[in-house]
Image (tube, rainbow, N blue to C red; front, side, top):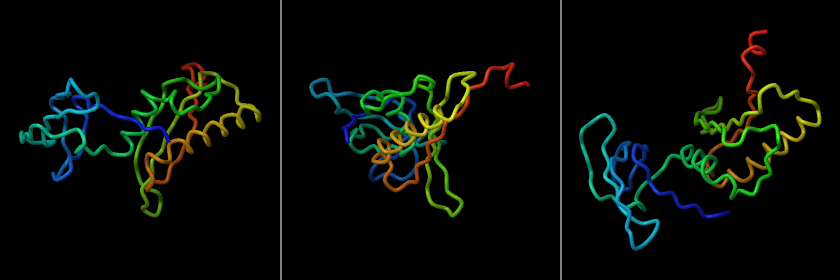
Length: 160
């Protein structure tokens, strides 16, 4: 699996080692001499409580946020060929639970508007879904992953 480094972004919600609760990143202080290192200032969500100078290595991102960033920013490094009918850069990632309470992450990708799905296209999308699931599974090892295609319909077609 390829290694990914995520530089924190202002506004992201994270947890931090040794701290209780969900935090929003207020400020990012990168270390100029070494890429990938630095500190952040965090604010406890829903309060005015601020913790300063937390090392980037202490940040804990929820798995669905990690997957969303991989799909949005580093998809090309996954080495998956995307079918022509799939819209590049359109992925929705949500976490939830299966019917029996196990953690689940659902990934939706969108087909281009007005694509007519034939058996051959369905097979191609199924291969893409399987390849995407295989590459993403290491980012959420304790979650059931579900990869789904969503049709992006034009307004006139949706109304009929």
